[in-house]
Image (cartoon, rainbow, N blue to C red; front, side, top):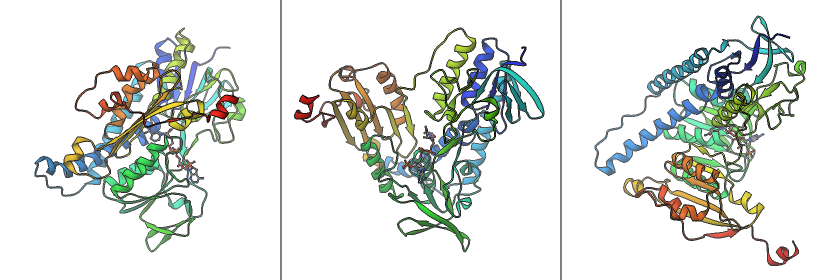
Length: 462
Ligand code: NDP
């Protein structure tokens, strides 16, 4: 049968655009449908506008700290509308580039929703289109909790359309978005309460990093409320009232649900195509990103594996090379470096101490220090933590973790070393760049402790 396209991509975000562009470059006839905005979450309501907001908070702090370095700076306040205008213009520019990139590579684009009619046919706006292969790259959407008054709360997308900085903010959740939003809003002048159901935020991160970020945020004046969940939100006299499971209440001008994201699969007609999902709606795929229908693939947040833009683009590129470039390959999900843009930020790659210790004996190296800049500025809550986890058997560095200025920038390079299997001896023989914080990663000489070592009786038994 002759199909209209060799590949039809549903979703013009990071995964879909990369896969479409590279596939077309390999000579395939490709189309993409996007119903909301080109570039997806990352460009429009995620990483990019968020990072601009993070930059805005940094400028405020640098301006405040400048006095200690001899500058006379008068800070008259922050203009939310001016920041929003500049941010939105940049987002529009980048989103436009995504659309043009596709057209420039000969990809047919549809500003429309696409749904399955059958496993090779899609309804795209008012057209029926057939494709030999189909890629589902529809991303995810932030979720509110199912509590009374939930509709009064905002989700992360809403930060980028708020007309003004809310004076008092409650953030529900303790993950990436919760902590980043807490730092942005506090950094721009809001009073911020974060409530999360666990004892520490950032589940899955190294325990020292989780404890250190609590210390850093609390010292700066962000109110962290562990071990609680919201039970109800109500509008009272023009503001919001959040009831908490510990019977406390918080008044707020805005409440953000940062309680995770669900894959965008609802209403796609997956049943008509025979594509199966998990109970949460994530598309089930194999190692080649093939769904239960071998010619239908899925990538990015819709498979809910490693929900990061660079992972989506890497897997999208690899799939295009495999399907149309005669270069079968996979992008590895191992040792993916990541950052949380808190203030200060977190950078991490590889295993946490807990994960590594569960696999075998490790040596743990930790340092904490105040960066030189803040010895002068005197700014509180800016202590840096750096940590390496080293396998006792092989000397390989299994994990590197940092909370501190430039952690995201520093961790990218460390990620290359860890991905290549660098040993602690490799780190030790590397000459530091002085004076930097990064050099601490190559001068960690004193082991703080060992972990994952079985008691002698148990070791003998195994
Ligand atoms: P996360 O999974 O990071 O955090 C979700 C938070 O919501 C957790 O604290 C979780 O608690 C809490 N939660 C979930 N369900 C409930 C519930 N029923 N009641 C109370 N609390 C609940 O999701 P995010 O939405 O913050 O981010 C989504 C993903 O997007 C991230 O995992 C990351 O992959 C990506 N991202 C990456 C960024 C970056 O690279 N800098 C920035 C932002 C997002 P618990 O841990 O106890 O389950």
